Image (cartoon, rainbow, N blue to C red; front, side, top):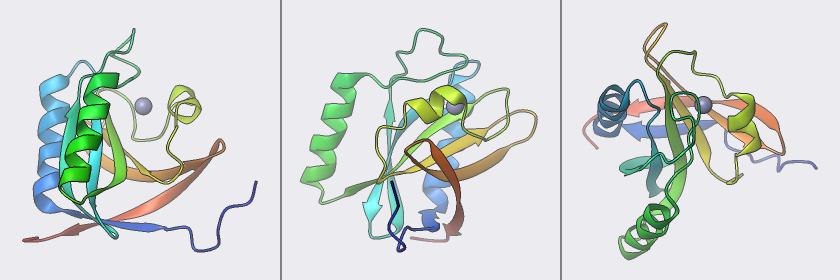
Length: 143
Ligand SMILES: [Zn+2]
């Protein structure tokens, strides 16, 4: 499979959403948190936390299906698009695990991983057909 040459390699996120991400990750630890990131164009301005119902929530995530559907309804009502999917790595680096890559069901979304340990780190990726590409994250002030 080839990907479009216009594939996005940069995404913008408001500082408020960046801070919420860190709060969600810290509150969920030692479990992973997960959720949707929504907005318009290439700017993420909304965060939808989703319950992590994975069997081993310290090392994987799987969002509650009913909460996923509810989030899609709210996004549609607000005229937002699903731009990103986030989860945390409480004790490992911000790089997708084998499971993360296998379960990357939304090729159009940017996958955000926030790591708490060994260092606080936020990174984003496109994961398409098992291929991982880094996406640059730009923090937008006052949006
Ligand atoms: Zn992961």
